[in-house]
Length: 227
Image 1 (cartoon, helix red, strand yellow):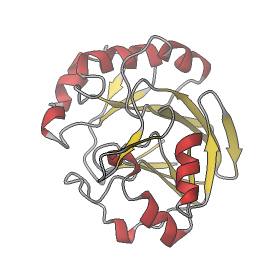
Image 2 (spheres, rainbow, N blue to C red):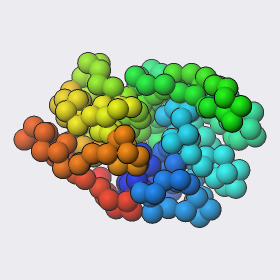
Image 3 (tube, helix red, strand yellow):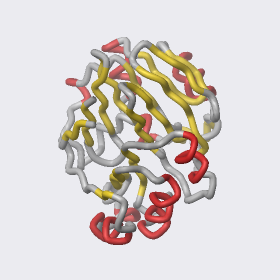
């Protein structure tokens, strides 16, 4: 299984002959190496409805006919826009032909803010457990630290976890380091930092806060690892 990082919270997974992209915020993301017009994934997984996570989902999915997996309200909204969707909700899992997806809690928000100053609420945000080829990936989405991360790690031994460290809107480095301990992941990668001024962070600070038995890795945009 190949996993690549593409700035902010954008993750690609290649497994079982399919390409999956999580939270494809590309246009407007100065830290990404991707171009939205060149992306043709088979599957898009969304953690929540904020624009820096939904990103280019609509244009990419309309072109590629990608299946969009998202929390129920967000999936329904995107279905109304003409996309092919699979709605899920927190605690639920579903086995697809490319792997198993389970949504976990995330403590954050989820909404679209319109030009008319209206807020479209899009349900609860989520984290994502993705399981394929005997491996488990955890993408925490945008979230605060919460103690049930211990249960997530106990129930689903995690090979690699992607954790936000930007602070202000999510966990900062200190809380994310504790989250890594709770989860017990073999490898932890920081995400959701340096894209905007309020979330400027030195990722090495996060790495240095990790306990000695946790492998922390700072990935640059476009970098790929195999598990």
